[in-house]
Image (cartoon, rainbow, N blue to C red; front, side, top):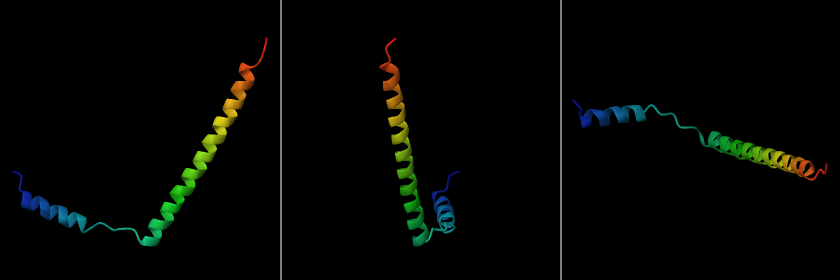
Length: 63
């Protein structure tokens, strides 16, 4: 059946195997995430502006 003490021992042994990233690696990855998020935000903003401009041209055409 379920033994809570054995479970806790297993959790502690698995937690001891965790390799945490170095501070420099964490900072570098964080900066890269912000850079990529900014690039995607700019890309989607420009795409939205282009589509909006094209839709305005199409909707203002008089036949």
